[in-house]
Image 1 (cartoon, one colour):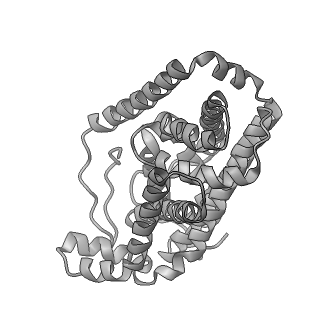
Image 2 (image 1 turned 90 degrees about the vertical axis):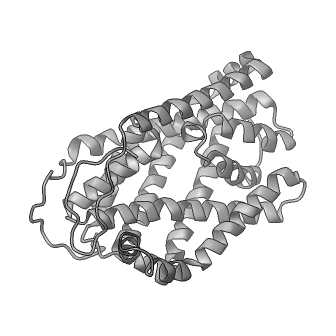
Image 3 (image 1 turned 30 degrees about the vertical axis):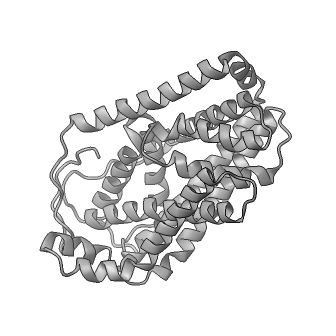
Length: 336
């Protein structure tokens, strides 16, 4: 994670963690980007880049732009989820703050190593704007975890109900979903155990107590995560239609969440290469040509990058949060 500028922790908030060494995020970025590019290069070399490039050139611009627009709309849904999680910690921020800072994080992710760069920045914006840095960091971490839980549960359910997929694909997916479910059910116990640990850990547990004590309150947020995954599957079906492919929507509802489980592993930059490999296996079993599967993965990577660039508007128009503690207006928690 990028080192954050120093700020005093408020009452009841965990003390700021020591700044990370600056070289680590850059090296991690280079390693993940290099791994992703290597995988894509090997795929293009093994399966011949010419048909893939030909397919990429066939994508109709209107379909690509529609996908970018839907993806951006999905990020509004994601900001709403973050707003709900922040309200559980009683952060006095209106929805417009979460929306602006979420888009700033999207824009940052285009240039800063990995998702952590954007997550760190939106936590700093929210925390400094409302003098609740510890709670802001907790809400961002919860937002990321809840998103993954929704993905893992949905993919596991699909894998369990699917017939014809190899066990090498379904078993790891179901296992990840089962682990996520067990961890979710154990949240109250985890909170009780953490409260008995050393003061630093107990302080963190106290900050996220609303998430740990009553995990069922997180079900609306997890439901939004599932809805977002369905939206992403629809986006990739539209991209396929733009390529002239006639694959049914049901195939994308089946394959995309499972592929996203593998792409969520922090191996490459935003799943580059891993997603294309998963598409080759999953869509290939349904008869999709290898060039089409690789082109689809690369198009989705390009569409998300374009969608993230729209965050420049929020980045330019949003006031930079203060560098030191200052009085801020009191707002009703969850207002907006």
